Image (cartoon, rainbow, N blue to C red):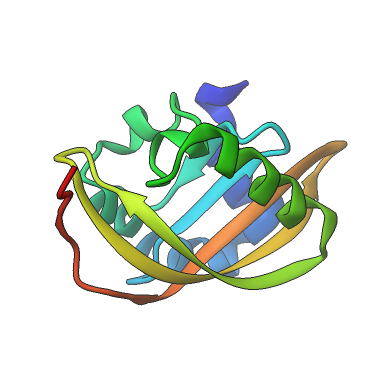
Length: 131
C-alpha cells in the first residue's frame, strides 16, 4: 500500500482541486501513519530534506528528525493525540545538515487509516551538524 499512497493522498484527502496546490506548494508537506512511517511527500519536502520522494516514502519520521529516537517517539505520540498543533522541529537532511522548521500538524484519516499531515510554514537556515 505504501507504494500507492501518494496517489491515495491526492485522491482521498485533496481531491482534484487541491492536488495541484499540494504538488506545487513551496511548503513541505509530509503525510505519515500513526507509527511514523512516511507515506507521502510533495516535491518541496523532498527538496528540503535532500532525498528523492521515493526514498522518503520508505523512511520513518525519526529518520529525518534531528533528535534521538527516545525523544522523537513521545513527541510523535503527543502530535497524534491532538487534533492540530503548531510546533518547531529540528530536521536532518540527507547530507547531515540540520535546520529548524515551524510546522502545523493535523490528524486525519484515509479510509480507516489514521494519518498525520505536517506542513511547514517557516524554515530556518540549515547548517552543517557540529556533531
